[in-house]
Length: 520
Image (cartoon, rainbow, N blue to C red; front, side, top):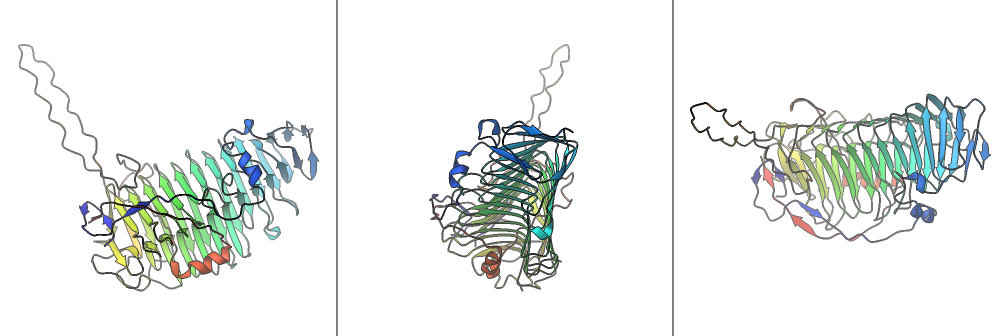
């Protein structure tokens, strides 16, 4: 058996493992590869990168510093633009552009461009004001678009972005660019339209990072269209992209009303994909209504490691009603790898997680020979279902199910599969305080030595990077809800991937390190 839960080792030949493959270059590069390569590492240092060659404000292009008489916008002729009460048509630039926001500003896309668009450069949005970026859904334009560059949103700025699809769209070449980095800001993203693909935040060959207390809300409303994805990170090459990270921040993401596919968080790629929720993060995911593929989170690696890590945080996933399979595909948290050697894994460490899925709540599956890993550790315990544990499935999978040791034959129909799971973070076990010597008797009584409390001792999984677990900051008690869902299964993966137009590159992955397994 290939499973790990709680503290008792399981003596079986196949164990959880973390594969470390050798990266290799594959696939065709985008046309903007040269420009993106020049800008690697410049996202947070735009002053030393290439400044904008020109900006276009409201349909007029400026090749040197400019602004309006009212002072609602100004550009210094390089990489610095300021908005203060601007209300007008779209803004675009070539090269790096930093937009400082003061007051309330509204940018509305015309029929030819996105509301805010940067090509061959990085876009940074910061300040203390509000920026409303809107593109009409019927035009299929983005609210914020960066081609061959990265996007950084930071400070106390509030960004409200609304469009029909790819509301925030960022692309790189597979080696540089394509990243979305949200630090401390408030970001509200709405994608709503009846189009083939309705996507809130979409990175192509990039990573999505939400950290430093940021508060992000993403809604993908398909209105009966084909697909709805709230947050989508593509790894189109073997070198960069495919990671979604929420670190000490809040994320609410929902995908609704699609006919074929509704997924809250989706990452796909030729090689590794990775979702990490860490350091007191609070994440709520919803995938709802009548889609045939209805998943909370779908981490899918074609030929690499697919990993989900929830550590010291709270995750709540509502995917379907959790009463049983009713469609082709319905999972709360799903990690899938097609590699012959790289594993899919799910690690939940000292966290509160509540997940529902129509087919299964939590499921890791490998379509090759590598053993998957599903680990619950660091004080976390399954409280629903009672006696819930990790079970093997046919098809080289691991699922949370009812107590038992037999192999589950059909994940989607078996009554032994848990479709609603609650995992609560227990207090780490504290060792007994180290006894202190009593003070030596003396004519004048001396104060005794104070008692010291030992540091909590926690055994972590091999994959964990921390050495001591603490209670998630987002929840005060272990029993409070926190749900996370990753969804996707191999049976309908090819169809859904084709609908989204996913292109991936293959890589060789080798080296599986065995790790201890534990069961309750």
